[in-house]
Image (tube, rainbow, N blue to C red; front, side, top):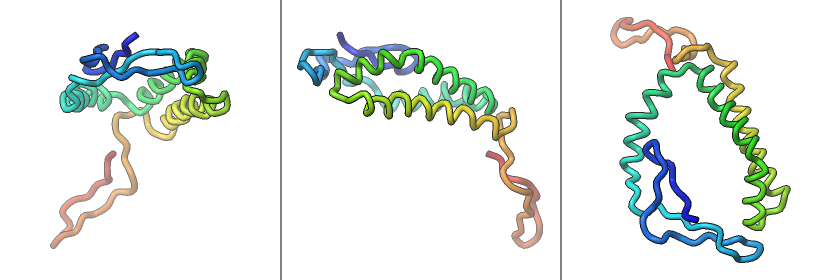
Length: 143
């Protein structure tokens, strides 16, 4: 099995044979993986021109709910992650920290949405007068 990479909105295989990945317990071949031929500068551009505008249109609450949906989906697949982790030689406790700890972080990040308004921006701090030679601007910082 050759692993694919999700880039530019689609699944693609890297070029060539790739690197063989082995089961750490029994030494069996598990899969191959390659990023050869994948244009990383194009990936960055895609993120900036396609992903960024979509995220910027979302409110903090929408972003948080999206993270929560991802966490719920990953949690439903955790048994698969434990099986894959076992093949690396990791113990159940090692895997628990990585798998459920990582998914737990997504849940924690998603709950931060409650700390922000249901807006696409956040006003940070108090308004301030900006002085140069005379007061010229008055306003808060927006994030």
